[in-house]
Image (cartoon, rainbow, N blue to C red; front, side, top):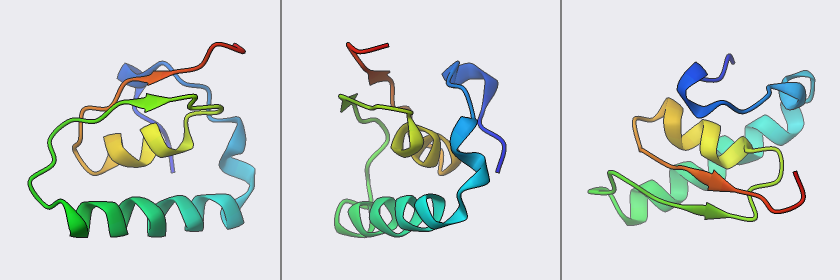
Length: 68
């Protein structure tokens, strides 16, 4: 999976499909619970995997990480 260039997040996690699979499942469940979601914030986003998954699904989701 390539991450959208508009997110500006590095795709260093792409080599680990295990993490990617769980991000897909977690974001999928959140969006099933809240189907009208069009935007979200990820505070403490780390590598940005959840931001990337939300972006892939068409949700505007800026991520903020203080350690980067």
